[in-house]
Image (spheres, rainbow, N blue to C red):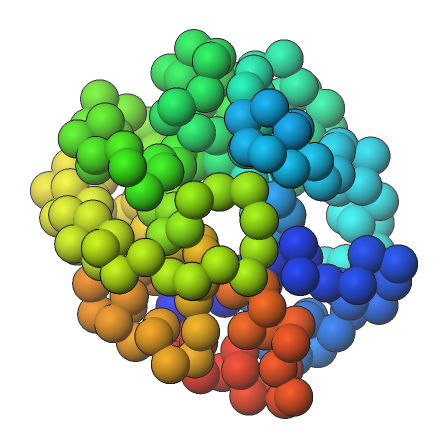
Length: 214
């Protein structure tokens, strides 16, 4: 079994409140919110005001993924906005350890993500503080990309690191996950699955979430 965190990047942005209700009613565990600054990744999405608004209209824990160059600068805004877990990138410009400690001190779960080309070894010095690791299985920036199969060994390697150093840490994957390929990611060790178009584009959203999570 895995937690399912549908990415609202694939939702109808003109009707986000309804979309949040749709995924909640369909059985989603979390809602994944991709925050992009147009610098760290070549796309711009939403900021803390939208996260705050969503926290008021949904009971789903907000899984906030900061794909921004300087997450430390904006961190307090996202904490106050109601994030349940905040993920920053190992490749960001902020002091990673200090930023993670600030998230943790605020009572929010802290997570660290790596891009497809970043080795799992980059996570080792942070593993003890982490509540979750996020392995990107596409290049971050846009939804609807194809899953990079070469990332499967990285998922298994991250799971091994977790088992050895921090067994309570969750392992999330994000990018190109479908009902057809999700099983192999869970076999590799993933237990939180981000899915965008495969959930929001499904004819039967509830069935898609059940398949992804079971």
